[in-house]
Image (cartoon, rainbow, N blue to C red; front, side):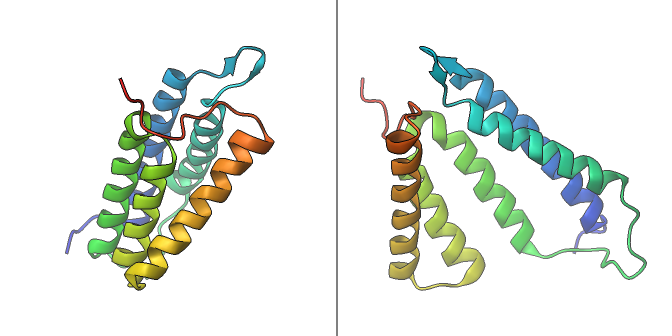
Amino acid sequence: MLTLRTGRLAAWVLGALALVFCAASWKLGYWIKGAPGPGLLPLGTSLLLAVCAAFLVRAPGLPDEDPGFGKAPLMAFALLCAYGLSLPWGGVVLPSVVFGTLWMRLLHKRPVLASIAVSALVSGVGAMLFKGMLRIPLPLWPAIS
C-alpha cells in the first residue's frame, strides 16, 4: 500500500486531469464556422475538474482517512488517461465504447456483453445528442488518411 493520503492525492490527480482536458480542448477549437466547436465540452469539463480539485486540495484530511489505497484508483486513472489520449486519433465513438466497456468490466466486474452493450448505447446516444441535435462537429470516427 502507498502511504500518501488518498484524498490529497486524488485532488492533485484531478487537477492534472483538468490540465489534460484543457490542453485537448485548445487543440480541438472552441468556435468553428459560427458554431460551437468540439473543444467547448473538454474546456467545460476541465473547468469543473479544476474547481473540484481546488476544493479537495484545500479540504482538511479526515482523522480516520485510510493512509493507503488499492489498485482500483490507479486503474481508473490509467483508463481516464488512455481515453483522453485516444480521443484525438480515434474519434469519439470507438474510444468511448472501449473505455466504458473496460471501466465496467475491470472496476465493477460486470459481464462482458452487458458492458459492451451499455457502452455502445451510451456512446451512440451521446453521438446523436452532440452531432445530431446540437450540431457540434465532433469527429465521431477515426480520421482515415
